[in-house]
Length: 163
Image (cartoon, rainbow, N blue to C red):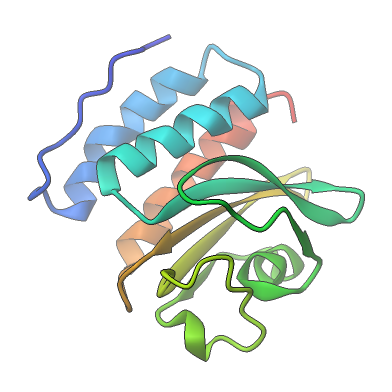
């Protein structure tokens, strides 16, 4: 397991940051089969590199999303199917990018500082088993590059963990 993280400089373009991080994240998760441990490391890596407001996971348990490993301020503990951005990503089994959370119908405001959000579902055997949720304190922060690379990171988790 790689325990040192090579963090790109702050002024590095997002795509380059992801390109440099992807093999490091793969190295972190490939020899560890515990999903929770891998989620903890991934949330730490993404928070450290991108300095997002909140980076974390919600895990599907008993037909609701339950708070898992995360980095950031206190968060909502449970989210219902189809509710908020996380619940909608679960329902649609698709990534959702929200440029302005205040314009998203039914947005769940866990933090008033959250301005934009991206949610990536972790799908295993055609079922969503968790979602990666990232909030920014800036409106219109997330771009297509974020979605593409975060989907690759989530796939590393579902491919390398005992789901």
